[in-house]
Each structure stands twice: as C-alpha cells, then as structure tokens.
Length: 393
Length: 127
Ligand SMILES: [Zn+2]
Ligand SMILES: [Zn+2]
Image (cartoon, rainbow over all chains, first blue to last red; front, side, top):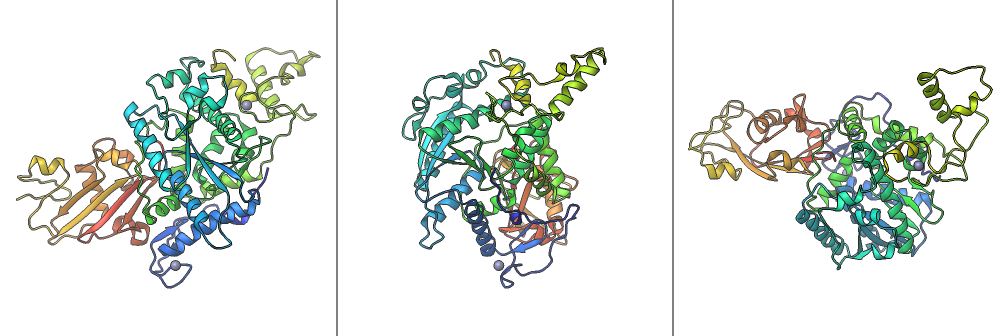
C-alpha cells in the first residue's frame, strides 16, 4: 500500500472544542479580510483559501510519484459537488504554463445507477454530465450498472460514447438485483453495488488503457466507509479503502486525490469558482435504513461537536496494514487471510458462534477444525456473509 | 399591505401568487433578505432555491437565529429536523452570509442587514 505523508493531516488534538479565531485578517497573508473558517479555528481570505486547495491537491498527487507524464487517468464522474470540483482542479492544473502543470490525460466515465430518479431525471443527469464535462473539454464515456450486472459479455459493448444514447429503463434496478434475494437488506444491496462498481471501474480502466483511476471520496466519505467496513466485518478492506491508493489490482491503481479535503472546503471551492452545477435530488433516506446511512449520521453529528473526529478515524485507518495472501476473494478481489499459527479474528468469531449455539465437547480432538476457516474458499469472510443474499453464488 | 413578523406570523392581504412564488411584499419593511438553498437543502423548502423575504425592522433587530425560526414556521415544508437541530442548523449544513462563512459572524447571533444574502448548503448525501 502506498501512503502519502502524515504531515498532510491537520492536527486538531483529540478533544478540541470549537474555538473560532476572532481575528479579522487572514491567517496566512495577514492582510486580507477573512471569508471562511477551516477546521473550526483557522480563518482565511478567499484567495489564500483557493491557493491552499490547489496546493493540497497538487501535493497529494505529487507525493505519490505514481503518475508519469502522458499517463491516461480514468475519472469516475458522479452526481456530486466533489466530483465537479475535482474536474475543475484538474482542468486548472492542465491549463498551467508553469512547471507545476499537470500533464496526464484524463478520460471520464459516468456509471448510471440513479434509480431513485424518474427516467426523465436520469436522462437530465446524463445531459448535464455531458455539458459539464464538455465545458472542461474532457472525453466522457457512459456505462449502465444494471447492464453490467446482467451481462457476462465483454466490456466494450457496454461502454457508450457521450454522443450515443445510454439505454435507461424503469427495469434497471430490478435487472441489477435479479440475482439477489428479494428480502435483501438495504445495507447488503449498497454493499453489493459498491463492490460491483469497483470491479466495473477497473474493467473500464483496462479497456480504455488507463493505469489509474481517480475517484472523488473526501475525508468524510473515507471515515464513514471505514466504520462501515468495521461494522460489516470487512476488516481486510480497511487498509485498501482508507488511504490515498488502492493497488490491489496488478494493472490499475485507484487513487483518491480528495481524501484529505472536507465537505466545507469542497463547497467553498465550488462557490468561489462559480461552478454552477445543479445536482439531482438526493434519495430521501431514513438514516436508520442502512448501516451506511446510519454511520454517515453518526460521523457528521460527532464531527459537529468534536472537530477531530474524522481525522482521528482516518489516522487509525492509516496505521492498519494490508492482509497478505495469494488467493483473492472472487467478489471483492481482496486477498483472503492466509492460515496462520495465531488465532485469527475470523476463527475467534466462528469459535464464539460455535460455543454459543451448540454444545461442544472440549475433549474432542477435532475441535479446532470446527471453527477453522475453510481452506480454498472463494470468498473472504464478509463476502461469504454477503453472498448468502445471492440467488446463485 | 402585507405584514410578516418573525415569531407570530401575521400575513395580511398577501396574495396567493406572492406567497406561492416566495415573494413577501411588505410595505414599511426595510429589511430585505435573499435566502438561497442548495446541495439538496432546497428539497426541504418546496424545491425552490431562492426565496426573497422582507421583515419590518422598526425597533427590532433580527438575528439569523430568529430567521431560522421564521424559516421553520413559514417555508419548511416537511421534516424540520432535517434542517434545524438544537436551535441552529443541523450538522452538515453550511451557512454563508454574503459569500462568507457564518462562523466568522457569530453564527446564530449575526444581526441581519438589508440586502443580505443568506445561503444554506447541505453537504449530506442522505437528504
Ligand atoms: Zn489571505
Ligand atoms: Zn470479499
């Protein structure tokens, strides 16, 4: 796993309370009038703020030293502010005439899965994506997640040029979950979608000859995802999904250039650059409907009173190391934990489950095999659980 | 003549048209404010992004705190808990006063001035 310098984290202290600088002038240039407060304490003027954003973005990319001039980079475009802001930062960087100029070649993909919208609204989102990405002068490709899920053929038939019409139907959601038990929880459905999207992105990247994928998660998304992974017993995914770089695939790396940005920085960046983009309506959700939405509520509410919450979660993620193993899970593609002489958490879980659900004989010489992980299995522990909601495994 | 006050809503002779389009026309009022909702927060106020409102400011100072109660009583269509919490906005909603962060202006205690533009942006995914 590649990790980008710890120094990019802003240290807040674990229990810092809200204390806004009352100074009328900017923390950085000390002359201009302040316009916003970051991390609940540092006040900046508009231009120093924008400069900081650009600097943070470039240093995140630069420190990784992964991308070479001319490399093709696939951007996942989503219907959210962070996505538009990211493209704006990249366009600005490509347009520079200084040595700091970015010099890779962006290719954009939009994965259509906005099933909470009407057909007309879904077409509007694509039209809008087309317009926005056209204004940035990038190439856009479209893929339907439902078609991908229902299709076993080659990826090139699924990828549409922006000028072509992406097939959208009322039936898409049904199609997507055709192989899933009807009573599957929202949590598991979201989990399946996220695994499916990751696999699709990597396939698209390979097809379009891109060695890198840029996604648009900000710090808050990463923190929520980390706690979701803990809750869903996907510990093996944490070190891969909690940092800047996911290099599980041997050919394509997934990078998260916004992982150190918070939602406030993104919103003010969008506002101050006059990026006028209307995003489609959010799905109206009850925060208690899934683990993912509940953890969003938990993290956002906690962050409001304890501004170090998200950074603390991110730092924990940064300290975890990747599981080593030669066999990868067939669903999520993450290496499956190898047999080791020490008891693994998976074995402990099976052991507790065994002792609490059946009568066991401690003198049984075969006891340890009863909770040992099954050798040669296809799925990691959490996907094994998840796969129970699939009709055909 | 139409009249809108903050806590005790008192709307006289206000035309339906004005009400529906979000324009509150008030004579004698010298505190005109533009409210803007974005990032999904507009869904909570009848899917309308900009609301021009005006309050009588004679002998009365209006703070953003008062404004939040007014929004709750007058334009929040449903589920006020998605917008307000503990006398302020819900965590995850950003507030801008004339393009600047309200945290620089003492948040709910900021005293509104005529022609102020107050922007509420939701940064939450789930609504
Ligand atoms: Zn400055
Ligand atoms: Zn797995």
